[in-house]
Amino acid sequence: MAGIHITDIEAAINYWRERKPSPDGVTLAPELRALAEVYALMVYHRQDEAAERGFPAAAYAAWQAWYQTQPDTPCIAICSTSQGDAECKGCGRRFDEVQRWPEFSPAQKRQVWRRITQRGEAWRFNRYAERAREAASAPASPPQD
Image (cartoon, rainbow, N blue to C red; front, top):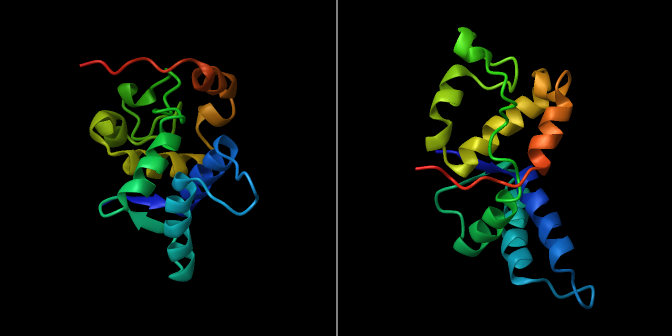
């Protein structure tokens, strides 16, 4: 089962801190409290991932709200897997990840995003970085059935 990485929880916390700042420097919004509890337990237990299944409902909802602000796919419309490459030169995903992307859970997608971002070798991070920026700023299209 996929896990939600601590850096994604940190990003979600920062998202909510900006969206719902503390009125007095002490009080936290419910979304922040929920995420902070998960974060604190992860730090205490020295874990860098929390299982997506079993994630506390309020924390998962807060994380999902942040997740929805992120680009869904790393695709930049240059897919070398369609030409037989095992890993796409454009986005960095492996062939099976490109094929199965629609059925991946949010945590699975974020795991792939983390790996390709850390490697930073795909064209989306260098040669065609401007395409990635344009795609990220474009409004999300509704899911197609």
